[in-house]
Length: 437
Image (cartoon, rainbow, N blue to C red; front, side, top):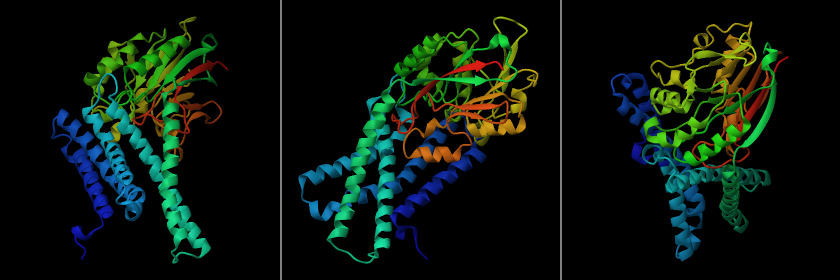
């Protein structure tokens, strides 16, 4: 029988990841009610950081072997090679440290260390993809050429070329991604017909924000820019569909202050995303947002009354994010019946639901909903994660028509999560013009 010591290091990392994952499930299921709130919050975040790092360790070993060990024999004595080894080590160390910045480095404005760490994490993801892809191409070539068992200078050259090409592609795409994400969000104007919307509310303007992710790499300056852009659009209603922050309300309160400048005449509304529940501080976030005159829709709805006629209105509802059910977050969880209580098919219904899968579930239960506004996917945010986000969500990004009188709009996000990069996606502020039939 093979002992743990005899396992290869990749297998040991996989076992460690399994142990951390099991501890996460155990603490959620059995320790949640026995631990005090603050301890539970820290334990959850620490477990998530450790789980991510144990998974990354397997990839980091592959990166090290591909970019360092491959060249060790020929370049071991070179001073340039020693500098390269140090650079690769620092790169991997920064990538691994990114998840811990949520615990220790959150303030009004991002720390340089956090920006560097998350940039390395983004580059790490791209590098792993290219190393795997180029390695697969190399193996396929060997198989098709019938040279799987032959070695020679040509094979050695191709082996050396693979990490060099992967690193070059990674550097180029990282720079492009950083430049793309540093630009202000684009304003995307979309006209959506809403069945049974009163004619007096034709051309009503709704500005949709999602996935701002205030935290280690997004601070007050970027939020103030977003608020200025929203105010310039002069919306009738502003909605924020979750993942506003990755930190506790008390810690990051100064960064949130620009939200107090939002002054949409028919109100500003908010629903939770999965990251609000990761903070374990939803109640304090609700209180903070209310102090800025932003109304959380906690499985509830409001009547949006036409400024031209008090008898004309539509129902704006919001549901808690479905992650609350997974985390067993007390007093929270998606409850569509409660959220739509009093909303009948006699009037138009607009629903705010953070995740597209929640939008799908809502339409299965209440097909009379006319419009659902969601976020969560980030449009994949960076290559190569785009494909995964597309496959895992029933609605990916943009406008979808579901049936004759129902639409779903998924925002690609107003900022980004952690990694200050965008590849194959663009941050967006969505200006939605509601059209009466």
